[in-house]
Length: 506
Image (cartoon, one colour):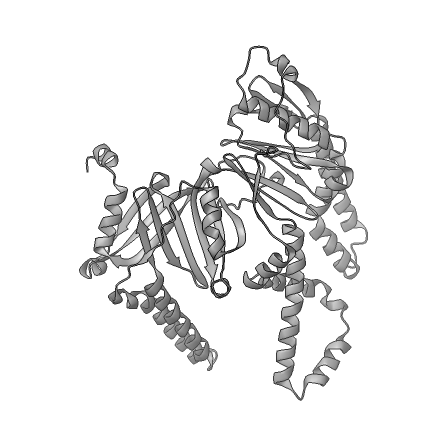
């Protein structure tokens, strides 16, 4: 029996830190607009501190009324502001125990645990390192051993200790294997090849909006004087300078997020660990992986790199604001952010050996080419003509660029779209605007497969095939467009197994 315990008193500090972060926008608003809002005096700051104080008071009361313990095969958390409720998970159904440590956690040597199961999860913030490790060890031990009638004797058994320098996931000494890691050079490559510069652009625009009024006008006037005679050179210089600045900003942010990024494999689990200011771990049960895919943009293709993603199911009910998971809202996880194409085969075979990863064969007939481009071309031509006539006479230049890009995208779709079939797996190769996406799906993980044909496609003996698979708490779909009717029938017959045929009377 794990006796009833309270959260660490430093929870009050971590909650105050989270509140300050959540109020960062109002703080900036008052700091930069307060002097210009005449007549309000101290009303707005007083209102702000009142709201902050009441919110923090709620956090304090919630801390006081929160406790947790282990009872048999259940881990229980009791909390509530006015009415206390008990939330419990079955220990045998725990999928992962992950941790997260932001700057305040690390300063005060505490951590945040997230205990996840298929149905719901529990987050504990904050615990001392000693208590967190003890709790994680006991939960793992109870999960992997049979329960006896006298659960109070658990402490007398020889527990399987987790030999970790700071983490609380499922790794064990002598069993865990590091599969992948990223150096600072790799992070620089990711930013250069992955489009992270655009994130820096968004941040910079926001910063200019906030701090622009503090920049003296004389700086802009002097710059205009210097470059007035060399407009083209000035644009090139400013563009290069802007790109370097954005790259530096994006790189710093990426280093903070992905510092010491590594992927480790332990039995049926794979764990991601990363972070500089905030260290995070995320454990993925391999049994939850529903689909895997590669994404490769044109620059990665030129340099021989690619990225590797996995899609998992997740109906987790952990409060999103407290979740430490790197899973997106769609259930997508970027497992290998940047890996050499010739090294990926060995890595993915070790992580998920149940997949075959057959290469796709291109199958789009030549008569389908016009179907990829006709509607985009029509849109650009009509839009450019209307804008040129009513608003801006040079809008046809934008229409021309859009038409050329549509032709290029259509040609790439015609040349690269394809699929492959094995007994229990299908491969889809699809074209994105800037690259290629290759998805691998097991037959038993496909929720639905639909063949689509309108009268025009039927007359041309063409069709579309759309597959649905579980992703996050919903599903995702991928579609092969304008393929031969015979390929549609082949994919449908492959999916409609004998068991499904008998069940549906087909």
